Length: 254
Image 1 (cartoon, one colour):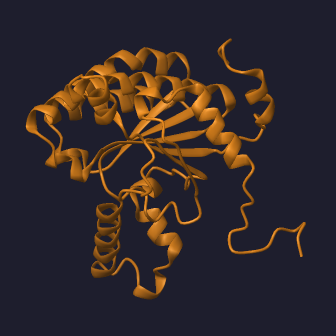
Image 2 (cartoon, helix red, strand yellow):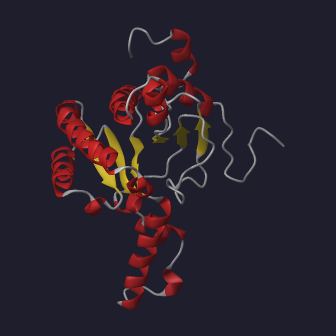
């Protein structure tokens, strides 16, 4: 941990038992930039530092999966110049972070309809995924051109195709099969225990809709470019105080 991390905060957290999968809706880049008189792309660039901070903290405390909502299917509605800048920032980020991922046993995977991205971006994503595929300390899941509803649609199509080909019967379809047919299931990514949303917005924005059925939600007003290690640890601390019953009762309560 960094020397400036408050000892009191570290003492509050059970570092031996962190959530194994944390998902983050990284929101507030544009508002952060506007509040400082910058162009929106500056907010996205500053948000890259928050990603680095969170990835390093996950690595240090033993989180196994970190899912980041980086580009949604709805983000194509943004100005073309901003989209082009985001694509360049993504390529730059991947090139800059590859060495650290390799040095620290971090694997990168992507979920979403990335085949709709520019070819140069697809090549860079594929290169980094292949280069890190054997790393197993932390898996960073970049959700790109992603949407929860499109993911479910794609899973339904996959299952329907198997039915048409008579590989399965409709009676074979259950929750486990649907889960395995999702982007996350195909990558063997478990459902998240904790979902963090920055910037204070109280919605899930079409993110991991099936997977977060029993996920604990944590919302902070902090804008993503300002979100750092201490904010992340605070979210984990709050999560660890929750009583997760999954529809049942706490064994210590009547």
